[in-house]
Length: 253
Image (cartoon, rainbow, N blue to C red; front, side, top):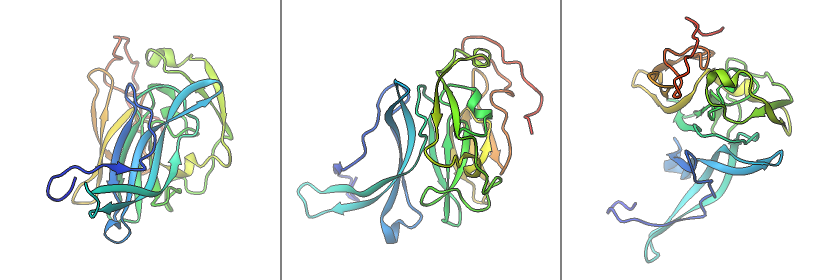
């Protein structure tokens, strides 16, 4: 959109897998946009692993080039690079995909939903159900709770079960082997999230998250480093199919 309110097409945008809860999620201006014209994009990226077609959350960085001399005015995304992705792919919605930049403008926070698979939110080896803290280039940010730690070299991927209880015995459909070191532990700021669709810093510098929960269980959370927010072990609600969620009174430590 131009300052005059006119629409302009954007060229060179990445392909996204549209369907269900997937597609193009968000576009965020870099804290340094005034000098480098960088933007960040989150979207569902198509892919197949283990013979199963699926999708993954991707975070890309690009330079936004505006051409006001063209008729009509156009824009293009140049030098686009995916700086973080969930390489395991798989099925399910609830991607998360929200970005909030740290108040000092030197890092970013990325929400990653549980993809309707429940149990990965409590697995420190998988990024699903986490809030990640990354550098502006998508690397683990210094000072993270588990900075320097790496995870398992491979993880089992399940299809979305019907509810929290079915997830406990869900069969692994394929194993994903990380192409290099599994940096998930060193990227993780918090864990135990279901569908973290809102993320923002308050004027006092505190980070808040809005989370879509199961039936009757939406949450507003103050996000603090290293905390486990409990999903799917702690939730004062029920599954959407009516199956109760046996809930602890506290999140695991």
